[in-house]
Image 1 (cartoon, one colour):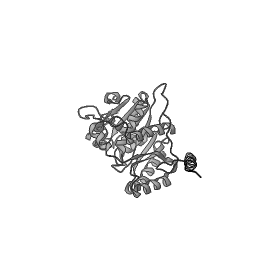
Image 2 (cartoon, helix red, strand yellow):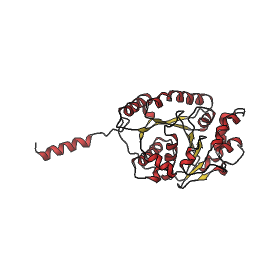
Image 3 (cartoon, one colour):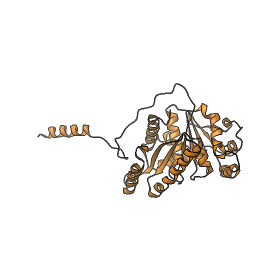
Amino acid sequence: MSASTKGTAKAARGADEVILGPTGRPYQGFATPPKLEGHGPARIIALCNQKGGVGKTTTTINLAAALAGYGRRVLAIDFDPQGALSAGLAIQPHDVPTIYDLLLDTKRDPREAVVHTRVEGLDVIPANIDLSAAEVHLVNEVARETILARVLRKIAPDYDVILVDCQPSLGLLTVNALTAAHGVLIPLECEFFALRGVALLIETIDKVRDRLNPAIELDGVLATMYDPRTLHSREVLERVVDAFGDDVLETVIGRTVKFPDASVSGMPITEFAPEHAAAQAYLRLARELVARGAVA
């Protein structure tokens, strides 16, 4: 066989090969979602994980920006007293109405607390340290688990999707987010200790579904901080896929220093470094969620 024939045969075999993504499934690009003819009512998605540092806020910011880039009207709710989401979008959450004010006064119009960001189509309701007192104030309220749902019900018609960035705990605030949500997205760091706590979170979601919100769905488990160079990352991702199957999203978010750089700049990575692989990953995540029906 000549050298040219060998090359042709190799190319032919290559054309038939299936490219596998990090989750071990065939890699899909997911089509660019079509533009919407109208907007609202919003589907509410809670981003939850009781372990901190797994990428909840980073995912909320960048997924929100990616969806806005595809023509969706997005509202991000900062539901963490640390206010990282607000800071990550260069919002000063002091001396302005916050989600805490809306929880304490459910008759207040939530539109008063909406802050427009530099990303067209992306709005935020900020939070600050005052939110840490919410659980104490709400503990004696009637139907205290449904207060956030009552707040969001008033503003849902204005948006296509509402993303709730939960604090790293399974307390009353997180239960409020799960009770208000139609779906849950679980960012999961590709690290052993992050994997251990997911069973408890799934148990909490099941309890909320059974007692408070029968319609809640698991929209997916998102692997974050993935480093394909390390055996540990690859093994953890393999175990996640074994445990959750098709609930694991095909999009995987890699580890990169670009995320903290973007946060310092107060910009989503899709604006800060739009050609970077991390920005492309969040755009792909937005397309995947639309393809799965989690977002209109």
